Length: 539
Image (cartoon, rainbow, N blue to C red; front, side):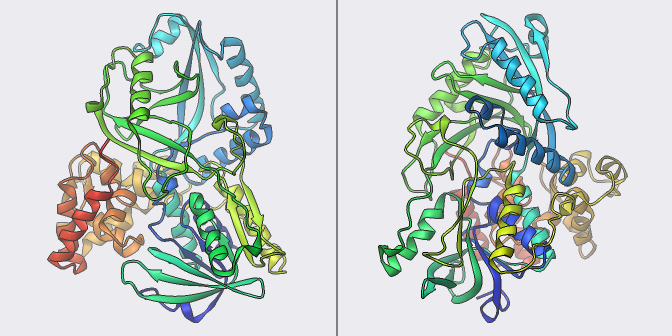
């Protein structure tokens, strides 16, 4: 199995799941000195973490359901992420228009915004502003004007590349000694006398197997939490009494090119059909529209947008921006994911809490902890709580957490703005490439360019859409834990999230891998075929 000596040591904690929660826990635990192993049956950030609305937000809509503590936590964590990852998490203005027939009228929205501001004392982002009808139309000329009363502008934040947020947490964990094994499926959880002590895993690429051992195991598999826990019931019967933990809801998004009337800032709009709020957001040079929220009981490895969801998102966008005239042919790509929400008997998806829970299965099953729920915005605080618990379970003194202060790897500069200005890129690199390198890698951009020292040909631009260069392909595999072309294009270089979806660039990237990473012609061809199966297209 190609991962050092993971079967020859006992880890303090083995984490199943390399999404945002698993990555955050791994970083915090490794920074506090624990010996950590992370396993995932896919890639880092390859599941639900990649398929969100890509917002770091305070949870304005949670106020409707009285979840004040969650809003307060979210606003605090938003500020922390703006500080420790400013290259990835940036302020985003959102405009909420209100109409004569809106369920949430001007008074309701203003009350909510006053509470939102009050809960975020000390924030770096501006306070909300209320606009009259005329000012609203000036701000967003494409809006439906019939029945328009006015709007509110407030600020949250956007993580344009959520995949990179997960990755940088994992890279930081690795810097602090964590071992990371992707494409490693857990086939069996080893239990002796009600104690979990090890895992039998299979490398899904090499098909080699091994056993790993940990004093504690964290099940941070997101929507797959119940599947992981279910292996225990299969192995040793139902006496453990492990109940269903996840009651996930499906969220789908579509991505389109900019269209007539497209907003310059994000819109937070109430849908006509069901009065649910949804977003129309400028993203990655395109427009991201979503999300839906429906119960999901299907195959977690085959979650796809359906015709009803597509029709809903298109119709609601055309309703609020009449000039858009979007059709199914307007869709560049679509994606869906399942939120790992706690299982409840509530049939109203909106009322299912977005809070997270850390479930210790002791005393029925010792040394096994499951993470339920969680979201991009609050992953760091969830991780801090989980690692505090790990130390208590290990009967060790709980050392202080520093993840709220220590920047992520791409933000290690006293001021990112001045660093960006001073970034010493070769003068013949176009501005689009320089911007791309800084947006994707932050202060690690010079490390990408170092790869070109061995071969200046790696300065070749391989993606005219994004400005990405050949060196990034090599960098992804040598320094960013990529194992497949799909990892490289969708979750490292971000080439695959452009309008063309990386088609054409995938063949160029495979050629570079042949030249610089030793791939055979057969592997290059197979990797391209597999990439085109997995990219989030086909709406």
